[in-house]
Length: 203
Length: 202
Image (cartoon, rainbow over all chains, first blue to last red; front, side, top):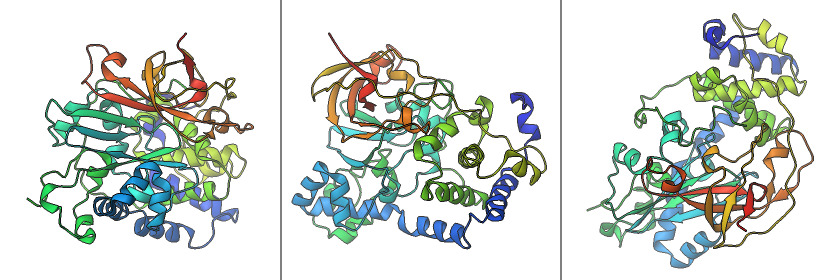
């Protein structure tokens, strides 16, 4: 069959292969008209970082909600209208503090709480991130622009089962009196995954 | 499976491409949608999907962009489940349509045992040729249980079209310096470990 060394030379382009699978499924009557466009539109419009940003903003401005979020993340985000797929059974929200920094990875593939924090960014799915952040967390974070004090405890979470994770960043001191809508604007996907902090925002 | 996908702690990789140039490959959303269609229609589950990616030939796995892995897994499973044939896919392209390597047997859960928060546990020294969600970097290592999940479908069976029994996972906290002595940045590494992968420290 195919030899590893020559495989790349012989294989059809990914575009051709994707189109071939689409055509084969269509020929078998299995691909409903419009499914691809509807699915992709839904993904682009519904699975966005803004969902997670709103969750964070609410946690920052509502202590009781924050408590519920830390106790049972999936139920708490559902209060705000954000659902999760059936196979995402549990959402664990990881609370940062001034001295504790949480970082999420999926070393084995690309598992992400995508309905809450948005589709995983390319770098999260790349081999480099998956290989390095469990073993070189501090070094990799510094390369990505987050230079943590030596005294900060780093906690890495490898998403290996049906639990999904999201970081609850520390609210920046300069924003303590901001309304939730304005707070949601500052929460980035990087902060929700843990490759960035927001401590100095708004100052 | 001790496959190329088990990347945690592997060395030799360079800088993380943190700010990639935006790209708009139209086949990528198509690949994603075709896989989502299969999951929606219960043609395959997420465990089978992950294992199909793991079964890609090593060099193909490491050199394929992300969505090519998605595409290959979807095509492989559509063929293995008898929905389309490898030939009809190959006939529709110029060049080959490489699929993943054939699937082997899975396995069932270990006899149940319970672990509690605060308990020091050890990951069994097991080698599983089928789908397993134990990254190699924790094999045989000791850690502390810091959390327990509700029961989840056991992936070692669920990826192999077997009867599935659910069991809890434990968030186990390891020290990076114990996982890779003298060869890691200090951090706590938490892994969601299925109950069957753990053993008591006697």
